[in-house]
Amino acid sequence: MTERVGIVFVSHSVLLAQGAVALAGQMAPSVRLIAAGGTDDDGIGTSFAKVMAGVGEADSGAGVVVISDLGSALLTAETVLDMLSDDERARVRVVDVPYVEGGIAASVAAETGADLAAVAEAAESARTAWPVGEQGDAAQGDAAPAAVPAAAPAESSGEGGPYEREVLVRNPQGLHARPAADFVKLANTFPVKVTVNGKDAKSLLGVMSLGLTAGSTARISTADPAGSEAVDALVALVETGFGEV
Image (cartoon, rainbow, N blue to C red; front, top):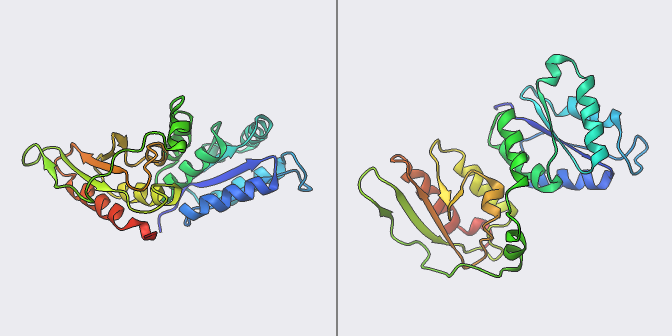
C-alpha cells in the first residue's frame, strides 16, 4: 500500500481532538490520524510532549500535516516543528486553517494518496471554500437547484470535445461529508480535470460548498477529451445514492 501523509489534530481539549479524529476516520480509514489534545494530565490546554509524540506516530514516511484549533495550540505545534531535526522538519507542515474543515479536507486528500504539499494545500483550501454569505445560505437550503431527470443525456461539443452530464442527487441528506468524500476520492482516481456545478470535483470542500441537497442537480463535466470515463463514473456513483437509499 502506498504510504500516506499522516494528520495530527492538536486541540486544547482531549475530547475535541478525539472527535476530529473519529470524524475524519469515517472518510479516511487508511490514514494515520492522531489526536494530540489537552495537557499532559488531560486538562484543558496543549502539550508539547503529546504533539511531538503525535508527529512521530503519524509519520509513515510520507510526512505529516499538523492541524490546530486555537492560537496557542498553533504555537505549540510550531515549537515542536522548531525542535525537529532538519530531515524530520522537511516532512512536517504546520497549517493555520479552520480546524474541522481543514482537518477533514487534509484527511481525504491523504486518503487519495496525495503528497505532503497537496495535503497541506487541501487543508489550506478551507480558508476560502465558502465565500462570505455562501455557507449560511447553503446550510439553510435557501437556493436549492431545481430537480431534473435522474440522468440527462450526455452533451458534447463534438468528438473529443467537452463532455457533460446531469444527475439527480438521490440520497436524503444530499452530498454531506461522507458521500462528498466518496465522490472526491473517486474523482481523484482519474488524471483528468472534472468539475461539478463549476467546482473542482477533486476538492472536498469545493463539493460540499455547493450545498447539493436531495432532489438537486449535479452537473458533472470535463473539457478534457479523455474525460468522459471520469464523468460517467461520477454520474454512476451519484445515481447509486451512496448506499443511503
